Every structure is written in structure tokens, then in C-alpha cells.
Length: 228
Image 1 (tube, rainbow, N blue to C red):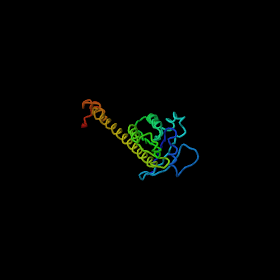
Image 2 (image 1 turned 180 degrees about the horizontal axis):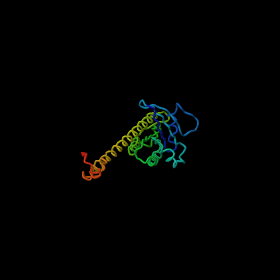
Image 3 (image 1 turned 45 degrees about the horizontal axis):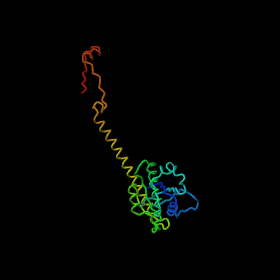
Image 4 (image 1 turned 90 degrees about the horizontal axis):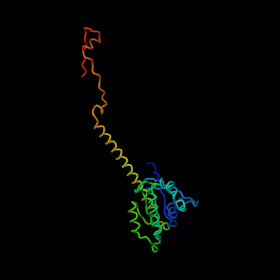
């Protein structure tokens, strides 16, 4: 089976570690050139996957343009906040709503990621608070550390699984819709009059035998054909 290709967009407030998180995941392919788009091939559950990762770090001033440029084309999203900053956590509401608007759905593969778990002593956002927000957002939840690498790969792998599940649900919904349309069409056809359903065309009334005889010139030899 050929590798599937997914686009993952990383969003969040400034200084929450988005770039550090992205580069930690990509460390084997790290290029010091400043970029905001990366590509990496991984394997999840035995399936090869190609990921296009968009890191929105340093683009806060262009946030209004993300809707068209990134979010509409994104298959999955990582919404990052710092567990040491309640302000960065509160910013996630705006990012989540922007994703929902761009995708025209509240059911989108999203991972809520509380980064900087290595700074637990400076925590301002409790784990349960983050998890509750994720549940309200129909999203997955995890806590990570870009510094130590804690949960970084696991986070991406689980988001990929959610993207696959979402596509499977979409495919099932399309099949059910097609099945419903077919069923509705069958019901409509079956309710039509038989003559319309079968496309019958009423044959003209055949001439009476006497008239046929006259048309044949009154021949004494007669041919009588009965069509049942």
C-alpha cells in the first residue's frame, strides 16, 4: 500500500515552544536554514506515512491569513500552549474556533498539547484543566516537553491515527449517504404506475378484420394473426 500523505499544522501563542517541538520531532532531518514547512516520512502501526508539517511560529502578525493558507488544507492540527502560562492556554480558544471555521466543522483531528512539562514546578495550567478543554473541543490531549523529547513522537503518532479514523468516518458517511440516495430513488421508482415504471407504450388499436380485408383488396385468401 502506498504511503499516505497528511498535512499537520502547528499553532499556538508565542513562546510556547512550537518551533522547538517541531524541530525535536524532526531532529534526524534538521536543517538550520530558517523554514516554516517541513516534510518527514514515518511509520505508524505498520503503515508508511508522509507528513507535511507547517510550523506557524513567528507568524502571529499574519494570523488572519492562516485560514486560507494553512488551516483549510490541514488534515490535523497541534494546538500548543505552555503549562507555565495560563495566557497561552486561554489563547487556544481562538485558535480552535479559527480551525472550526476554516474546516466548517467542529469535528476535526486536533491535538491539544501542554508543552514544557519539564517545568512542572512553574505550572499554571493543571492537567485536568487542559484535558477538559480538549474534551469540549472534541480533541485529543497530551503534555509534552520539547526540551527532553517527552511524548513528542507519541503525540504525532496519535494525531496521525486520529486523522486516519476521521477519513474512515468520512468514507463511511459518504457510503451511507449514497446508499440512502439509492434507496430513496428505488422507493420513488416503485411508487410510479407500472406503465411509467416499465416504459410501456400503448400500441395502436389494430384494424377490425373487415377493414383489414378491405385494405388487402378483398382477397378471398385470409390470414388471421392473433398477437397475445
